[in-house]
Image (tube, rainbow, N blue to C red; front, side):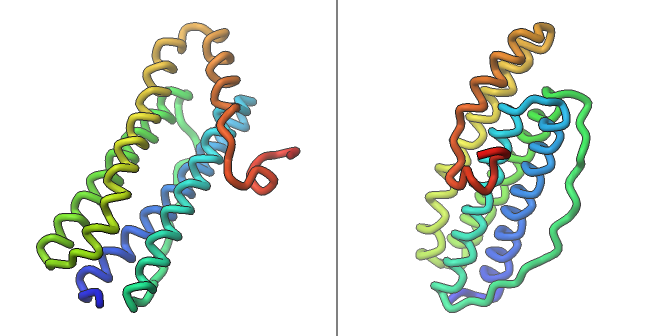
Length: 173
């Protein structure tokens, strides 16, 4: 059984994951407005992944006889100065989520809640991958920002990322 403190923290993290999806959908809309469909596709797939993370927390809470409490999801920004600025914001957000997961793991250790600590191990490893993926794209964008041809090549490359629910998330599929 989850302690009240752990249950509250897990619910807060679930809501942070929902905000992450909301943020990435907002970024997808920004890129769609710029006619950068590959960037938009990548962000839609990222949003879908974040929804999956939220669902993992949802299921875990119920598996441990807890009660899911959905919080308000704040409205994300809808504009960024440039594609570079959008990916800088995405990278900062992933770092924020990593810190939040680490705090949850520390709380689980403090509470001697070993099942939750084991559950969080997947997220700890996932965040290393999340940060690395966004940082790689950010670095490539910074190199390409003075070359529209390079931006379009990167757009094409990012368009290859396949979401799990393509009929739902991709336009025209």
